Image 1 (cartoon, rainbow, N blue to C red):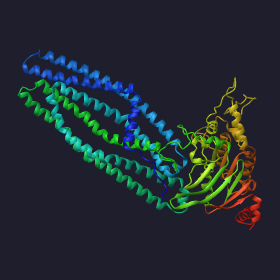
Image 2: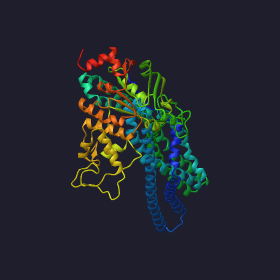
Image 3: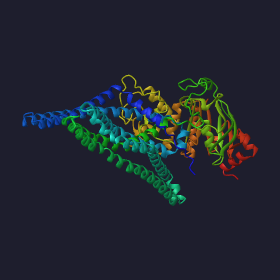
Image 4: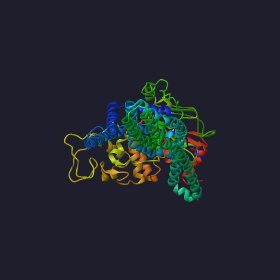
Length: 629
């Protein structure tokens, strides 16, 4: 049974308001685009009017015959060329505006994604967020680049053409309204069902992505436990669900489009019949009937464009609702209103955080936590950690050690009870304030595509490498740590900090060989797992929080290397509060206190020597660690 909770979807009203704000943020560009489209549509109205006058003159025997036809044809050609130029300019301007709006939307979405609490991302699962980040952004981009400009052009053309119909003859505009009841009824039926249909379609893609991602990431487990048939069944179910969602959406279109295709042909016939009757009774001129009929015929193209783009617009609106929903995603345990916590100012900075900075002790009181309802993995945890204390958390797998670490780091909020730093609940601290005080380092590490320097500086975003006076790149592959003949330039202040951080985690030697400006990650040098973990720990040194939660942070190193690394880190950890979660008990030996966890509870708590002397669960673990039974 999946424990994933999908990210929310913004309501239709919020989505429409957000789209309006995006468009109206550039009033000048939008006005210019609409004006160019209106001028282009106006040029398109000249030809039918000239042809109507030519027919009228021919019937009355006026004009100079071939000369009038030639002048009419020449004028029509001129206005067609002008219309083409204006349409080109309008399309270019709308494309620029669309890309600008799309860029703003993408930047805001990326900001919303990065602002999501880690617990929210984990509960949503990778499939939902990846689908929104890739497919929904692509669908919306296609909508903004194609459907929106085409629809805008069509709507302006329709409005201008209707205006021309009323100018030519108000009576001739009414036959066009014969299709309005049919179009209104069909549109009401379609739009009442299509939004939910497109949302279900997007959600079905998210389930496929999530299932495939889980299968690929857990390929070894799938093979070892012979789960391939079960995973294949899951994929088949997801694909079948996506097929059903797609079929339902296409079914709505197959009902809607034929109705409107028939409806928008009716005005042409009505204009010819009623216009002929009006002309026979002298109510309108033959020129007006001719022009009106051609205007109505011209309406078919824009109306057809609007109808063709309806599906893309609905899909784009559904994708925008899903992207906007990320902004509305509440943090687990936080108020959904998004209002600042009590004592916080409008920027989200907690006024009590000053006290937390001065009194850095952590405390858990009556803490319970569950990943699934009514199945607590932490059961009544009470623990106080003094500032500067080193606490080791040990216990068998599944005891709840990593979950405890995540609560101490503020990633999860307790189901009941409280977790405080300096007496201030972690839930009341803004993410920036929290991450500046408490940092979690796990065995799950990552190398970002970029230089080694950039991978280190992400832990200290306020610091940028500033070269000293006259400093130039050295001949080696990177500055600072880069090798090369001769003494080379002196490293700048930022590089010196990076070198100290790398030296603290035992990574200076390989980093010197590689160079700070060497590219790593995707498209760059591949780092071994132990080096990736050293890089992660170097970031921790640069981040400089007062409390560290180390969740088996040296698990990828061999025991001797891990021991050396922890000893080299000891000086840097001096004065900080450290909670170390590990299976290697030499970490517990060096800690001030050891907390033994079993079945979601702390069963033993005290110094290493005291717990060994008790002969309890920790003593048994210690004996087993040393190979004694």
